[in-house]
Image (cartoon, rainbow, N blue to C red; front, side, top):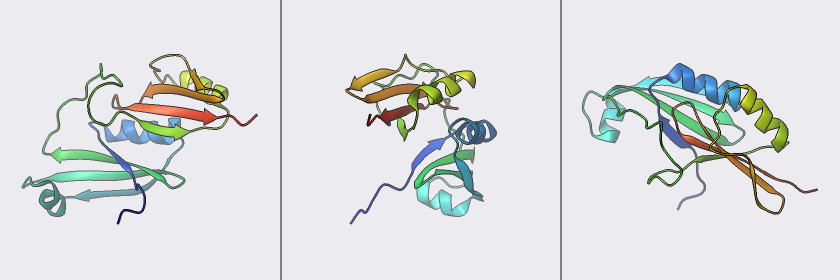
Length: 143
């Protein structure tokens, strides 16, 4: 039986940029960094696979970054929108929504729109990650 969700994974073309984004912008810590070959080739069914996998942790949450040397992935789509099929976003809870929003803007993060109070006392904003993945910041205000 399933117990809980463990992680979200992203295949990236620039590992250093992705580590910097999730580390410097989001505040995650790198807790795992290893290269795999034959075992991953068996898992994904492509002989010759070679991939570097990095785990970025924030509390109990992990974003798993994959940098495939082989096979080569297809380019991320810079015009990706929230409605595109597939995984839609990675969600992060924040404290002090306004200050966090301003810090991300100061770091050059590109938001899809202005913050929205989606229901009373719940603020949400979507932004692009290092590889055009969409991330969400959300705060549920109690006062």
